[in-house]
Image 1 (cartoon, rainbow, N blue to C red):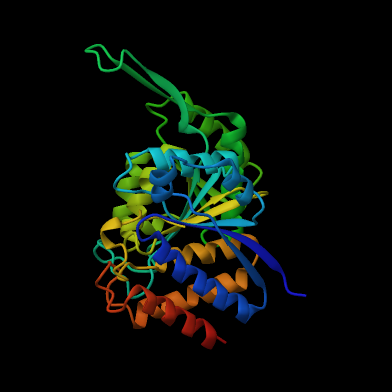
Image 2: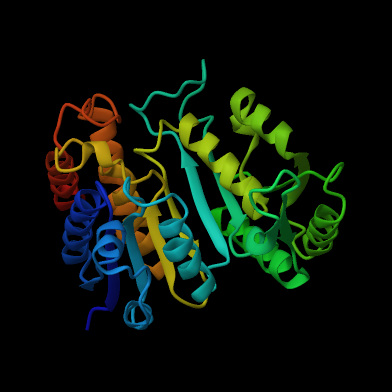
Length: 356
């Protein structure tokens, strides 16, 4: 009997439903080809739901998501809702509730996609960022004193625990070993200024490294990482870092791999429920026009299958995406692809069906 997976689908806001619609179509196609079953259950949360009901993340939705094997997310963010309400109320709460302590960001430049970096190609841009996802400055510790007064004080504390840091670093070492490319793990930090937090990160990194003699290691400050991503992206294999630095450098990484239309990521609990999403936002100005690039969402679906253990299906999707980017799509930007959102999804499905 073929395997079966329960997938919770959160289409989200703006162009999220269009992107996720194509992702579900591709996932359904590859599941039929490889012979496993995907059971999709949809959950309506996001900006429109919040405007209509005042609810952000109802307990009933959390309970429903808890019954899934993985969560497939479109995009969260609505122009009529103050920034931070939905992002913190939905995205951060889901990460914390399901203890999705790893943010996994593959960074790969595909043939046919342009990069703003001169003289760099697909052989030069192929690395992964492992970002700690539930601690650091995003833990929510701090507060405001005398708000609105001339002597107002705002404090935001970065929380780093040995447990949180070590499990992130161990995951990065294991992922680097499994990836089996350059077998090099780089710690990204700021030990010369953030001496308390990154002393813990560096000590833990060096201690855990002793258990992985097959993995070479190095360290770089976050500002140097940003410079080298532009100058020498080929230096990197796997990068591990904290929550805030990871948030910043992965957006830079998305640009050098061709833009948000290509970038996909996963919020991973290695022994629990993980959540997968395109990195770009909801892009409300393109809503309903059928011109948004769905490839990041489709690659997020491939990453979901790979994490669930369906590596062959994930590779099948990636191979189809590679062919579309190389042979068909003119530009990965919205409205410039030469195809509609739906047509890009159809092309990828066609190549999956033909894949030997």
